[in-house]
Length: 335
Image 1 (tube, rainbow, N blue to C red):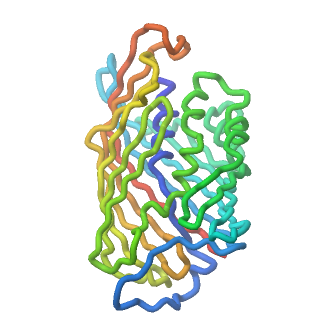
Image 2 (cartoon, rainbow, N blue to C red):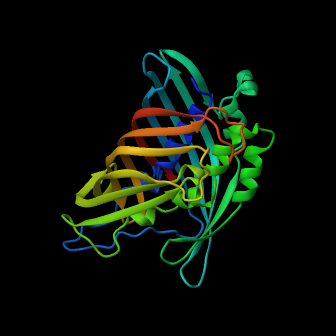
Image 3 (tube, one colour):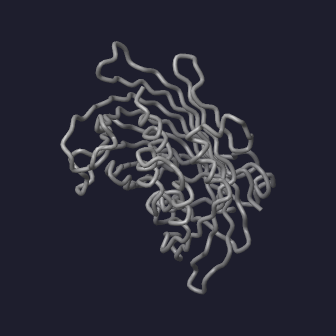
């Protein structure tokens, strides 16, 4: 199997995940929020001094069709990450400074019943010394990024991205690091802090719908475009919290990078669709739970010789990946 395949699938999975919420702290307390009889504003809240911990878990099933191989290659992957968000300050105009700290990274992969990878940053292993994923993702733990949000919860500025990329890519092989550099840019981290994009821009009540479009840059691999329709289905208790149950469905496509090199890596998504449900707690001002399913067909084109110069003519290879993935994002704590 092509050695570039795992990083590409890893980056795609990371790019499709978005912010969710928790199980303890304030979430363990009964809601005091009373269900309104009319429309209500669903808005993120960032009280100064608050710290939340979020956890993302992904399960992915892939079937690759590779030229020259008699049968498709089946691969299963699991991935997770946990990170904390601490509200450091609030500006007079209603903006906030929020620090993100990566607490845990984990990843597993099997093919044909054989374990290819089993990595968890919280568990040290002698095999990590020769594990390329451990060499990269192990450096994420402890890293911090600072976000400067405006009064509309949009990201105005980010600090610490360059330092993180330098940390991740130090000492690695150039061909393995190219996708990492393309992925971990400001656009990626803005995506992680853009849950406000999914919220309606006006007060809503059960039965209301609204569209959401997200464009996510992936460097040389182009731009991922996600079009959703959100529906406020009902008020529903989720654990001890009184939440707005939001259901969504949509499509996933890609746009090519207009500045990409003819001999560089590219990716197209065909027949991409997504659906899921999330529970938003208006009292805490957070989405406490999100469950999402995605199905898509990816066509990945890359040079057969990844070490060739970007403008050099050469043979390209094309792989087709039929992929299904289930994503769960929860808040672990709100304190």
